[in-house]
Image 1 (cartoon, rainbow, N blue to C red):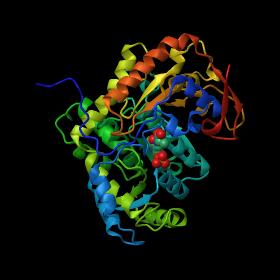
Image 2: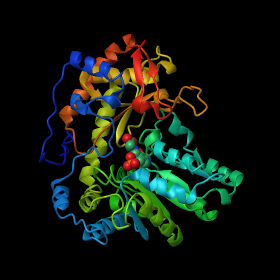
Image 3: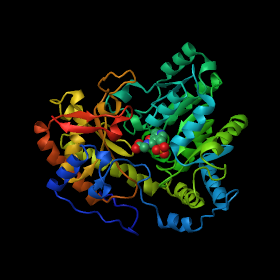
Image 4: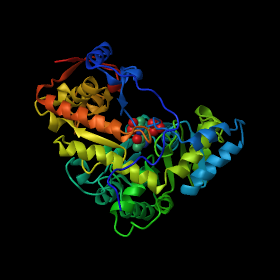
Length: 457
Ligand code: F0G
């Protein structure tokens, strides 16, 4: 007998209290911070879906491992445990620990980026793009067309457009493409997975032109689970074998250990090329630390070593992917437009479709995110014209999509928390026709979504 309720495959071991607030209190809190959800005191948030990055709960085995942390400056056993756990999944020759994903990106693109270089990906995450552009190189997104259509039901909407990739290589010249990246799952494209077939094809193109192939593998286990669920011939495989197969296709990876490695902090850069590894290790020493700890404490390395063994558990991944879909499907069924199919780590609400009466440059995503907070204390994140609308030349152009991301921290909220989120969304759906847009009244020179202040129109 298979039961329909998805139970959390864990018991709660330690708790953090949530302070209850009323709608009128929350209306004051959000007004006080200029209607910017990043500026809220997190104690005033009931359900925090701002990000799945570093916000998950660790297991008791991870907490126990923290006690084993060895803080030797060089060659600590914690480093060796971490390295073995990474190489068990991703058998690259060189593992370079960093304090988080963007530090690995900064080191890699300082070493191989630069003016005139072009770096394709299915879709670069913001920090990846920013680090590439900071090196004066160009970041190009080549996700398949289905990946840009929120309603399209393609099972692997994170796939790379292979024709476009080969065309780019021919037009740009092999010598100007230092690496091809692939983000699994494709966070900026809705947390959508990449198929094993597509990964094989991209790897083959890279081999044909002798271009290194790197993964941005933050959500590798979620991606592997989708492969097992959706790709022909994969349903009987162990996730760990799928992950190893993906790793063997690549020449290296950047990683944020704040996602699937189930840590609160951490990251790494891994690669096979000895010469490039030597350059990267020297850069690491400049800003992150000695190569056997990167920017991390020994105890962090221990927690990640354990997290890497837990995240490939089928019980965990089945619960993780089904519970994200549980939220997404409930919103879809009540008529809230969401990016389909539901991704691995988050549900993305299409604010443009939900609030067609609010023009893009009155920020429908911001309006929706504020209302979710006021109505129920839920903090999501606008991914639309507030985040992407201001161009380097000072002009303002609407973003391609106006989304609000509800990212689910790992192993943190129960089904009743999510049932509450669903109820709040139903209330906000009722209010949708009367919601108004916002104007920006204070804006920093860049990355405006973090610190801008808003006023209701
Ligand atoms: N790559 C991807 C695909 C990411 O989603 C992130 C972070 C990074 C790289 C950078 O890693 O934060 O450890 O420096 N994403 C977070 C998010 C911030 O909310 O989606 P980091």
